[in-house]
Amino acid sequence: MNITVKLHRQPSRTSEPTYQTFEIEADPTRTTVLDVLIRIQSEQDGSVGFRRNCRNAICGSCAMRINGRSGLACQKHISEVMGEHDTELVIEPMQNLPVIKDLIVDMTKFWDNLHKVDPYVSTASRQISKTEYLQTPAQRAKLQAAANCILCGSCYSECNSAAVSDRFVGPHALAKAYRVMADNRDDRTEERVEKYNESGFVWDCTRCYNCNEVCPVEVQPLDRISQIKHEILANRDLPESMPQRHRHTLLDLVKEDGWIDESKFAVRLVSDDFKDLKALLGIFPVGIRMLLSGKIPYPWQFKKSEGAAETKALIEAIASAKNK
Image (cartoon, rainbow, N blue to C red):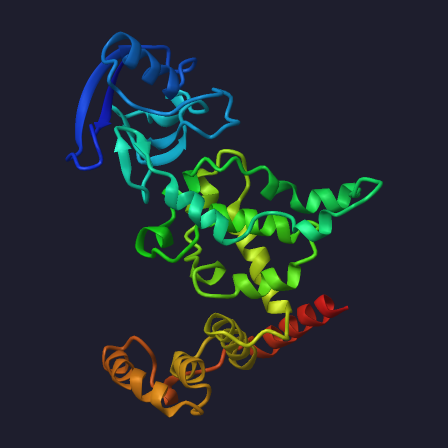
């Protein structure tokens, strides 16, 4: 089969990106994207730049965007990434990181963000004199998914929050953060929960699900982020942050009415039920515009859900079961 490859080219950091087209003959069911790149580099243009190493989806070096979706070039066969009606195989560098050359990106920010979560079992807990620190199969299973992360960068490349916020550490870092939190050998869990409750960590995640979709080794970073959130919400000693209040306010309103009364939501969330009048005045103009445009109902228009009582009973039953 003749395959048209549209390849992102950028000779240096300061160069304007362009695309170069190559034609290559390959069996789409047996040829990987990395095979294609190696053949282009060895047979047609030796200046093409990309990273590769193990060719077994272990090292993560060959992460790139393939037909608009990040993944490992060594793992993806042509038949997987080219749809029935696709005419080109488009290969580009990962997003959210500066390009050094062609498909090679500067991973400095990626590694710096990882270090922000301190993804190592604490030194103090490893000071063991005579025997190993053993784990049961159940204890190991708790952290297994996060431990599978190969730090390829695919999730970071597709992260919407990382695209718009320099402070967000990224799904890769938070997956590793949960891996340490879930490890019974670590002795800094409380400190970690407090840290990850700060701005730039779990509450900055937009829950777009892209990280789960592209992860090549099924770490499911969004699930790990959610698990950290559960640990934060279970810690009643932490001062209530705005994201926590958002969650509590939403839950309280659903318990009261069966669904959310938007006219109450902003007042409770931002002003803490009129305790912060300055904050309330700050959202007043927005609230008026939303009322006039029909985005939220007038207070006298809102009606409780017919199943409000059942909804409240269900929420309370779940909360009771969790506390046992």
